[in-house]
Image (cartoon, rainbow, N blue to C red; front, side, top):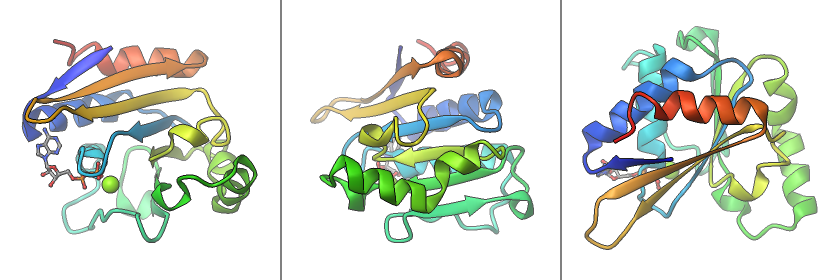
Length: 166
Ligand SMILES: Nc1ncnc2c1ncn2[C@@H]1O[C@H](COP(=O)(O)OP(=O)(O)O)[C@@H](O)[C@H]1O
Ligand SMILES: [Mg+2]
């Protein structure tokens, strides 16, 4: 399923669709190059979930993971991770780092996980989620490609895509 993102406004609309569909324990991995708009999308999604403007939503590039729990007033608690620093790591190292971060375990406790550069780690993150890849052709408009995998992933992907599909 493809969603065109010609403007920031269109990305914000997609973020709202994700926020509406998101449930505790969900997994979304975000792919696409540097500057594709992954962090922009997550920030808009957290705002749509109820995180107020006075709480900053920085990129987790250096921290690996930022948390938006009850004190952030999100409708669903969210872990926002960025695995860029782990690109090229062996499967074993990836498994180890993700276990350290506790993402898989915390999904079981009701945290939704949104993971930039998480494609290679989909299974290590517990699987059953949605992959969103933002492609940015030279000079062309951005397009988000959504693919659900696993029972919840398939349902979540179509719930996200249905109101925004063009
Ligand atoms: N349609 C769009 N969707 C998302 N971001 C856009 C769009 N058009 C321009 N941008 C800009 O592109 C940049 C994307 O940056 P960022 O979200 O940090 O990328 P990433 O996390 O994928 O590396 C932002 O500065 C944003 O304002
Ligand atoms: Mg980013």
